[in-house]
Length: 283
Image (cartoon, rainbow, N blue to C red; front, side, top):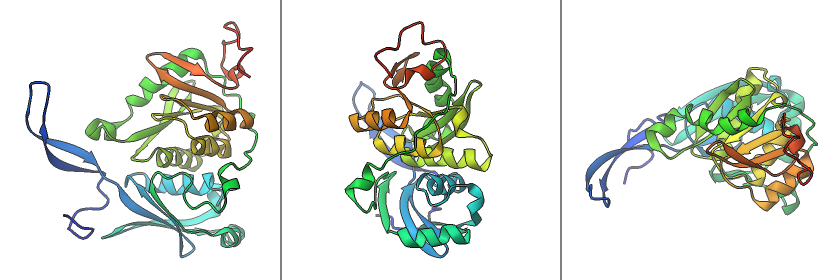
């Protein structure tokens, strides 16, 4: 079995593997492109805060987004320096924080070693899993047509998925369409990358919606609330916990967005032109 020092490039996003195709009357040997996942250590002021399995692309966006969505910083400027260092066993993203944020992190430091895109790994208590979220008051004003077209728009911005058919994507939707998209083997990582990319480009997350190629779990709602984004769109179903959290945080939750249709679960008033349909049953 290949090991961590088998000579491969740990920064490569894909690898090739031989397989045998069976069934459908078309059996035979084939070569398949697969996504890579590598350990990515997020290091703050010399100490490792988290080790996540992630796709080795857009790691500066990932580091910024993780830092913001975990509350380690509240603004990109609080990360005073950042470097990406590749090693045989994985990748380190080394960050230095402003003194006041470094002190706060020392007080709450915890070790987090997580599987792919683990969104609640390393929490200190059960109550932290259901933490109170800030109330989002953003009014992106997106239309039904814009929202229902978003999954197809995002699909066209997934080159890694085109190669592998095995990664998630997150995108940021405005009235002009998807203006930012990131991919990763973990859905939480993909969302962190988008949050980080927006912050680095000084784009306010309140002006649009996050679009996901996955189900909606509580962690995705939490990340959107902390980013100040008032609308979350996904191609699959939400969990009940995620729905309740979105409702409490004032987030418009739209799921099962496929084939130019979607289902709105919370705060439908944010959708431009929907009042004519009737939204009395959806807050």
